[in-house]
Image (cartoon, rainbow, N blue to C red; front, side, top):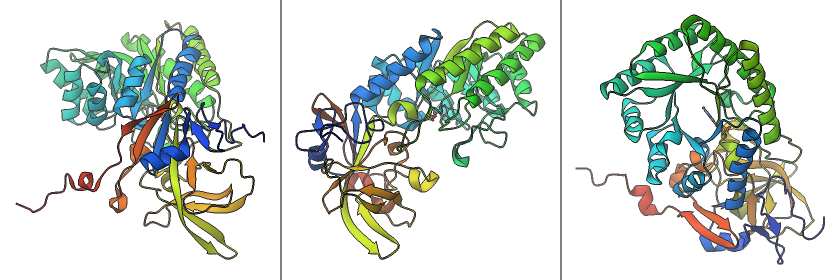
Length: 444
Ligand SMILES: Cc1ncc(COP(=O)(O)O)c(C=O)c1O
């Protein structure tokens, strides 16, 4: 390794480098200095990587299929600074709750570019979406179909909607993140005939304008075939519904689920490969069935933010179990990133203050929380770790902070945005006052 070559370069943000002190630099900022200034756990988002990922999705899809909207799936992580970047980049947004919609609204996210998802949208949140004037609501079930029709009709509106279908496709991902199979809580099943019934109903309702069909199969999807299958199945259905009921497919979404690299040796398809697979299946399917080309909506969440962020932790205690393993603990864990405990997700790590140290020892990185399952990394090969070292975990931008909790009454971490050597606070670390803000005492 040359002194200037950063390890894990394909997993770290684009601006990652080894600086003159041998430390990890992100967006031109020394990661060790950031850890000192903002304390740890700290999540560092690299603005250049964020913008690059938005532009890559837009250019790879639009160069093949100009009528494509790229809707960032906010569930992966949303904050106001990120939402503002998305507005600037011309992205659309997929939200699944009143809370995500409120964050989007606080930066005046253009309502027409917002799509509202969810398998149980409460009436209150549907009203909130109608108040804000969201562009599309993606209907997930019959209850919502009736409820939204009534709410829109009562306002004298025809709300543009897509139907989320459950196509019966297995994307071969973790059971907890598979959604396209028949036995899923999401979407209206196609193989059972319920999708046809819902479509017929949606066409007849005065408060809804059915403009398209949506499927999302799971996440992360390392294969291209599920996307091709999804386009094939949905287009055949759309053609049959056109013959039967005169339905016009104006919009089609194969959802999100685009995989990213977390560990060395993993090789997810390039964005261009996903684009090629989806666009060619869509174009061929439309030609085969004589359908006009619909607008394409893709919903990447993980693939926009995962690589943009690095989690920084400080090394604390160690425990040696002779002949078994060496545990080294950090000052974060499952409260800021539950993915390893929840899905056995794998991550990589490096030591931000020891990038040039070539010694290696086998360690298991444990979190600080009171669960045996709070292990961030098993069997990592890292330079010998000492208290005070800064552990950097790349690809931490997606579904970590978004699922963060206050378990053990811990404080959710600070988040900074780095660019050109400057770090701006996106979210301050919580305080004990924050912890008790909603806790009522004394009782009245
Ligand atoms: C409907 C829908 N779209 C998009 C996504 C985003 O998936 P990912 O972050 O893997 O791209 C999800 C994730 O659950 C989803 O449910």
